[in-house]
Image 1 (tube, rainbow, N blue to C red):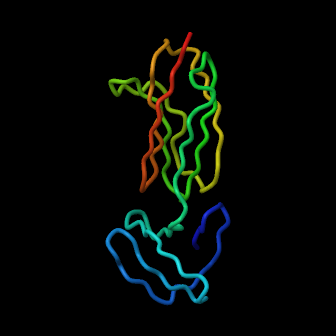
Image 2 (cartoon, rainbow, N blue to C red):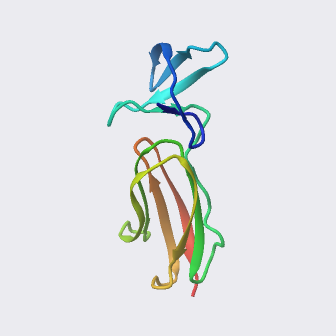
Length: 138
């Protein structure tokens, strides 16, 4: 099974592939379906659509007083962690941790217990990590 872009899965037959650095050039059974994909070598075979990107949006609003929204997009099924640290790296909140499917998500976050300051929110997947800054103003 392969996920190409969104959350839809399809069975595909791969005619051939060639390792090229960190990615694989793959020829599918249909001539119009030729993609360069990355294959995760850990945890089984997973194909990732090459033009898909893991996205972590800027929280909104930012700066914020008590609540904010964090938007992100996953491109592969796998262990996903989204957490918040202070500027010296101490984890102050874990927003999600576990196996998550590809797709676009919007997660509300209530930071009413955090003091004013700048924080880093981080998204980690099996193959990519992203981070952004957020500002809490009380």
